Length: 255
Image 1 (cartoon, rainbow, N blue to C red):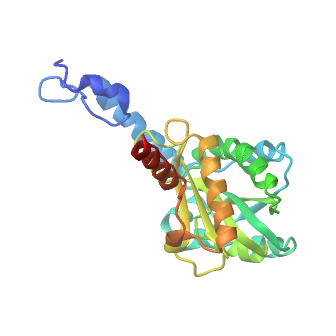
Image 2: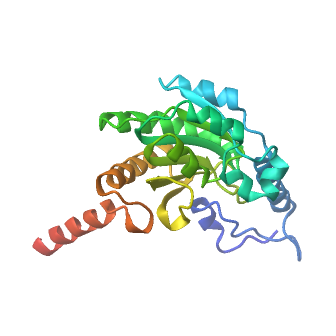
C-alpha cells in the first residue's frame, strides 16, 4: 500500500483524507471503517430513546422531568413524516397543560435524528448549564423529554408552558463518524409558526467537536441575551468573539 503524502495530516482531523490505496482500490481497513461509520449513522437514526434511563440521569441534577411524545406514533412515521415530529400528541398536549405556568425558559431534550447523541451528551450539557441558569435567577420548566421530536416542537411546548424562551437539545442528523453529535436550538417567545430564522443553533456538541461544558457556556450567553434584548435567531449573535477580537486589536495598536 502506497502511503499518501498527506498522511501526516490525519492526526489533525477525523475527515477521510490520506486513505491510501491498494492497487486501484481503497485499503480493506478503510472500506471496513467506512461501512462501520455508515452503520453507526443508520443505527442512530432508528434507535429508540430510552426515556426512563434519560429521566434518571437528568433528575439526579435536582430537576423534575416530564415524559412527552410527539404526534409521530413510531420511528418509521417520524422519519417519513417530519411534520408529525414538530407537534405534540394530543395526550402529551393535555398532560403539558396541567403544568402550564409562566417561566423564563422551557428546557427540552428530544431524540431528534440521533437518540445516541441525546443519551451521551444531554446529561453532561445540562449538568453544566443548569447551575449557570440558576445563578442568574432564571426560572425553568420541568425538563421535557420528548420521543420522536423535531426542533420546532419547542414552539408548542414553550407556549403551553408560558415560557419566555425555549431551548431544545436533540440529536443532529448523523454524518459518518458523528452519530453522537447533539444540537441545541434557542427561540425567544416560542409559539407555533416560528421559523428557523427565529432560532439560534449551537451545533456539533460532543467531545470530539464542541465539548458539552463549552456548549453550555455559549447557550447560557445566548439565553441571557435573548431574554435581556427580547430577540433570537438572525437578530442575535454571539458577540463575545468580536468583543475579544476588538480588545486584542486595541492592545496591538497601543503596543
